[in-house]
Image (cartoon, rainbow, N blue to C red; front, side):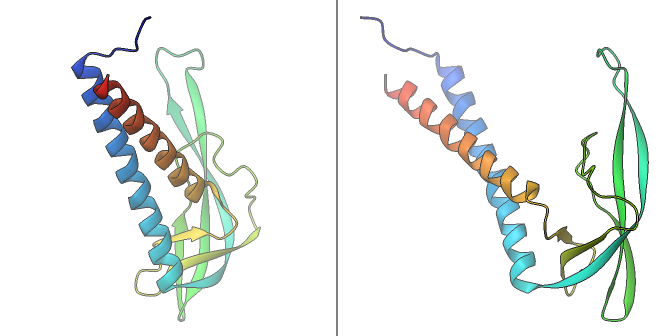
Length: 145
């Protein structure tokens, strides 16, 4: 009967990769929790969407674009403008200029925020946690074999 065997380097790499995924997940959830716990909900408006050109040499699509919404909001009488985007070319296509959104931001640092209806940030943390746990499980299982 054949058994599942991995070399030591692969087991260690999987374990380290899993630990990194868990760290990123926990960091994202901690940030999300801190903003919700200490934050305030504020109405914001998308004042414009900037189109940023990205060069992808060597790929099928040599040039792509990232769309970055610029939000305008007021916290305790002071007006702020901030970018909202995660660097994807399809980043938030549903956000159109002039659209009103609700954000949750920190009282002491209003530039640190998330859009209330945007679940991508939280889901990304959950996915990193799942991948991290799977990588660590595989590494431990393979290490015991």
